[in-house]
Length: 111
Image (cartoon, rainbow, N blue to C red; front, side):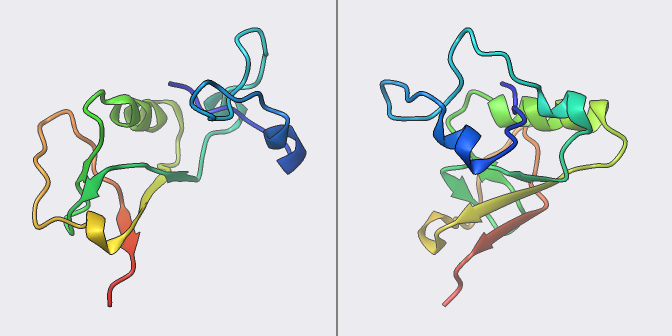
């Protein structure tokens, strides 16, 4: 997984859509990888479930964990991984193993 540098909302809007209606660069498109352009300050991390200890449950492929580890190894300043969630996604405990990376915070509505 790579995070690419996009310079404007127009550049984002011009990305082609996949069969799942997700915008992403075409196979032949050449864009800069964010880690080679100075790194990242903030990373919004997706997930299916979260707990209040900043653990998250994804789809089990480890893409985000691997990318967060790459960020820590390739830039001097640690990025801030942040998860945004609905309160229904907050669980008492999310199962984790030694390969899982925690986020710094999980933001959700607490009513």
